[in-house]
Amino acid sequence: MKDYGLTEEQRLIRDSVHDLAHDKFGPHAATADKQYQAPVHNLKPLAEMGYTGLFMPEQYGGAGLGVMENVLVVEQIARYCANTAILYSCTDGATPRAILALGSEAQKHAYLPAIVRGELLTAWSMSEANAGSDVGNVQTRAVREGDDFVINGSKLWCTGAQVSDLFLVWVRLTNDTGMKGMGAVLVHRDTPGFTIGKHLDLLGLRGTGMAELVFENCRIPASNLLLEAGRMRELLGVLDADRITGNPPVCLGVAQAAFENIVRHVKDRQQFGKPLADNQGLQWKLADMAMDIEAARALLYRAAQRVDEGNPSIVDTSITKAFVNQMAVRVTNEAMQLAGACGLSEDYPYERYFRDVRGMSIGYGTVEIHKSSIAREVLSGRYTH
Ligand SMILES: Cc1cc2nc3c(=O)[nH]c(=O)nc-3n(C[C@H](O)[C@H](O)[C@H](O)COP(=O)(O)OP(=O)(O)OC[C@H]3O[C@@H](n4cnc5c(N)ncnc54)[C@H](O)[C@@H]3O)c2cc1C
Image 1: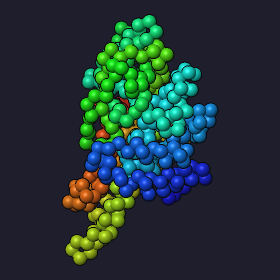
Image 2: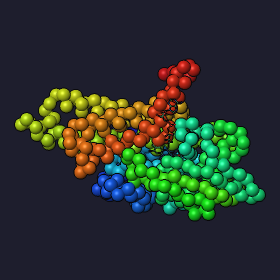
Image 3: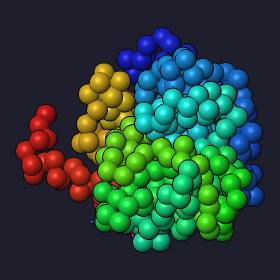
């Protein structure tokens, strides 16, 4: 692998995660997909190697490293098992980041060390039937009653729901409309009145335990309030960092895997008495794929470095997320085409690669919503180079 200007420590992390994912996760990735199994057991070796809680400060047992290291780990896991990469991002992503940035001291001490040890899996629950891109329209309510909050409502598309222990739930706390009346609470899996609803099967990422959540007079202590009403911008800020670590590296890792496999395939497969790779038209397709992947990696690594240097930007995040999402759909789709009928067969990985990245253009903010963010910055004059 090339060094991409990475430090020696970063290359060491990348290479050791690569070896683990290649040896232990890759051989079971197709089974997890076919059987809709969430491969949570893969988090154990990652925790043992110190790769859960990478960004967490040392006082909570973490490694205190940056977004760049997180990106490298997710990319290498996704190269061999996208479901594991998503589960890793659930527990090393938005919810722990939010608890670290916004939680009380008691919440940090109660949850962060266990999350770092890989013993407490977390999920992030924002979306509802009428609150998708329009996240300000959350209707699930949490009403204060004495020392408790009582929650009623339901949530959709919660990644990791079936295997998670702790849920960060976006709720309406006051009668103010939009984001103003919203806040966030932490809910334990075993809380009476809280049930994991229907398993939601999407096109891909079938091993991420996605489900709906149902709250019926679910009572939680007031101390489980993470964020009071009127401060949702701070929570969105947390999500911005996670949009770099949680989604684009999964797409990049899967696209890389599709590319490597298809290069081998077109060199091996003979048609008309010669390898497919001898056709110039197919060579140009490979060149397009290589160009796409290199551009995506450069964008992603640059965005991660900027966050680590203390210069995050909405434009960097949105350009990176939208470009890497679209690149992965192009590359995995082209790999299916180059593999012919094998590309569509479940006996080969190509259709799974395509299915796994397709939903990433919708999760973590759709490509269209990110393009609107980019356009807003461009038109306002804030976007310069
Ligand atoms: C793989 C995956 C994982 C997910 N994980 C989670 C999770 O863990 N937790 C969670 O809470 N949610 C999760 N989601 C849900 C996700 O956040 C929503 O699907 C997403 O916000 C889009 O909402 P929607 O599906 O309701 O689409 P809609 O908002 O209904 O959008 C439909 C279409 O209209 C477009 N559109 C909408 N508004 C505009 C506009 N103003 N301008 C231009 N185009 C627009 C969208 O881009 C899209 O193409 C996940 C989704 C996926 C696919």
